[in-house]
Length: 455
Image 1 (tube, rainbow, N blue to C red):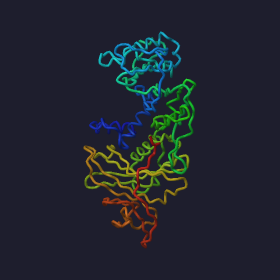
Image 2: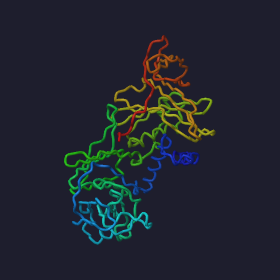
Image 3: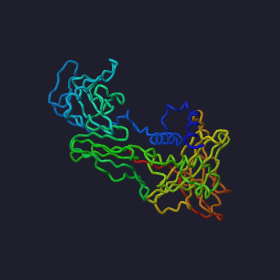
Image 4: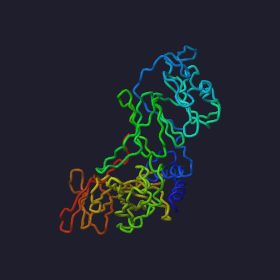
């Protein structure tokens, strides 16, 4: 059973949760994996109905500019006091077609009177032009004390009246706005703006998450485009009059890359692992990592330190510790827990136990990996206890479980390649001891290091 089939099957068991935002590895993988499939099938409208709005420092606009870009203010009935016309002329390849622009301004925003949109007298065309093989147009209007905007789109050969809305009208700041148009990300600022994009993030050799070098994309009118299919976790930066007014992270990932974790050859990694790791779980953990970082399968080296059952009397569960090497030489250590159906084949829920990014040169085989895995019910999310999982280096005979102050909470004997047991309250770290009681190494409990650029 491949990952997609497995996840489709699992989703049926989680139908009651589909209104919630993805929070665990299973749901992250489902979202990223299905989006990647849609790219491969050619359904590449990344978010045609989504207008991403970035709030900027308020700017003073001029008092000129009619609905299609000429100089006239309005005092027409129904126009709110304090309205000042938009001060920029339309941009785009259709900006010179006055009849087309006027038709866009007059176009009803909805067939329902209560959603008719701002007064026509306040409407302006910000952009109208051909992008990615079709016409895209942004019209704004003043309503309820601010700008509202609506995007229209359609084939390049249709009249303005026949364009369709790509989504609902919504409040926006037209000083900077962006829109996915199929495979193209369209960004509209003000003339003279420097719009730059870092198309992806990198994990540096020291383990930090950094943006790739920025690339300028805007023309003299303040309009920029970029191939959205080339974006991973990207970053947009807009500089205006010497000041950065936008610094925004776009969380992308593996859906923009070819290949999935299903295609990785994990035979060597699984063969070298201690314990009994579950291959489907390892692949899903790797897929989640690819989803978050935007790396391709040809850019990572996967290892498996350990895997095996960690359940208690409340729940049958399994765990794995996976290492992933990235191009800079840094290594990411991932710990995860999964619960299965009674047939032992279908994964209902997979959640992280912890993750850490280690600098290049770290000997991952000598690591002491200690993590707490919380067990939860797949039916109602109820807590079913916590297990401590410790994968120590070779030569470890016993383990000391320590609290935040360094005091020993308990000592556990090691009888296999890993220790699994109930996690005591206040657990903060683990010390590995050799057969004589000497300290081999110690480590805090695995945290949850960020794998994506911070917003």
